[in-house]
View (cartoon, rainbow, N blue to C red):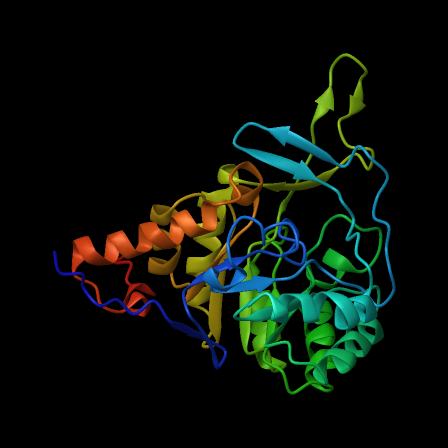
Length: 308
């Protein structure tokens, strides 16, 4: 049996990924928990745990809860801080063969973002993912991502201090996500990634208490996929910069839909919690889809939806 030659490479913001499947920031940490399962080099890329200028302990538990077709989380950006990433986690990723390393950064102020970006500019990270969309912290986070002014301010601050490709992670908790996407594009973003979690809540009817200590949290998983797909399609038609899609992707078929909608690559998050091998299964499923449909380059899928 002859195996067709497939080209799974994709280019996002000038960075070439060996395949379009990226581990989303948060659930994958810094890759340490997965090296016993498979080589990190099998992933297209890794978006690291969101990092802040200083170490954060995160929110008080309970901060994770299962929901139908998804999960709620209010972890609160628990992380070791940017210097620990530079000194310990980034070398680990490189030593273990990670292809493309994306540093996800967050802050309380634009100055926080710019200082983190400045420190990372001297490292060999491949791309910055500017998180202006985390709903699980009291200040900063999503506050910068819900207005065009806030999104533009943070993007401008980061762009001024780094030569790295800048990808801005957008929140769905807005009236019109395309306005935010255009604002960060105008300030020099090279790409956008979307969506982050939708703000949600559950209540324990026995205790009358919210299931999360912070009352509300970010909803992720298959339940949000149709919303994510719609927003990716809207943004891809609103900006000229590259789009990376995420939000409830659970299969190769989901990934194909996301690319049809306009994404150049996809990020896998919650699916990894239920099945740590899900990214590899999605890569294999994409290869199968290419073979069945006679597709030589995976990049041919991007933007191929034909709306009515």
